[in-house]
Image (cartoon, rainbow, N blue to C red):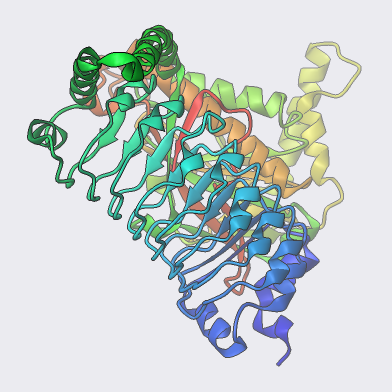
Length: 559
């Protein structure tokens, strides 16, 4: 059996020029064991920007040929048994996310320090004792997690003003003995977790970090017993105020010329800190008010993971599909549903080019009968109860829509075809039509035309299944889905802030009732959905860690 037969995912990624590849679980692990490692042809997939190989205990090393994957933006190698990472990883100049958590690493290669675009580094749950010198060269680093290792301290250059974007440092459950006073140089630091280490002192300079909002020093046996008691029970602000007070006390005790310079530096720094702190608090307050939060639920963490199977026949009709589940969208309050439907229409008109580029469909998860199949049917065989209509075949529906579009054109005295005309023409001459079919054999979506009354969203809808299809490209689907989720977060925030009254039954009948407390939160939860081919091989998972990442400063994504 040749390699392509053993590794169909790799062959598919090569032939379809895919940008993502995910290999995980027992079946992949068995292949790695029998092959003595990963299939070598993986390293020739130079178009990849997302590669994940996880939950494969037989994977103990990565070949140096990984240096060829220079377009990688995310490299996820978690939950394996990797003993080392080749130094050539430094060649991956586009890498933004590196996850090496839950392996058997004892050292990190210096090559990691050459990753100038690196934003997120996770090396938790390994056997590391030191971090490489030179991390300050990773100037775009925003988050680092080194928890559950055997690290005894941070390298000297880690406390560097060059790391002016570093906001999260998680280093719990290590053997760290000292935290330098130079920590104040990390001006963007918001979260610092050093719980369960070997610290005896916490430097007062920590209080000079202007943006620090969350600290944890639990489980450290501190010399200052009052401080030890505080870190096990007090809020961050109280601890920082105490450290600030200690710093002033120490400053008052400073004597002589030798300490005079240090005292003066401390005074200056405190004055600068107060100014920065005031400006930072005002800026943070404004940022937090304006920010929206989206939490991503990984497919492996979902109690009922949803997978969409895609037939091979859609390739010649409308091949690209991404899906996800959205929870926490409040459609019950006031005009929330109307605003959402208007926003979806606007996206269809603008970003989707009046549906000629891509089409969005939303469904009530409670009405879905899974599993789902993205398939094709002959126009005379495709039957659907379209929104607001009785059941009819695709041929009948399109004939009705053509008549309606023509009537609309005449009423408005237009010479050009309407937007409705344009997307109806997309299926012209096609022998097969695309459709999403549920477990009962009912068509719930007929892109780019309509979706079904069966799964129609209402004010009472609590979970939405969202699909985006396109004949253009997979990236087009992702871009549209990204834009839709951002818009949903904006609308949810608006609804939460205005706290409108909710309709009684979602259909406009009965007296209005106040929204309950669960509907006043604006946080959305996005559950990943996988699309697979007929053999069960992964085609795409949305969202991946390269999604929801571009120009979204007003959106906080929690993975």
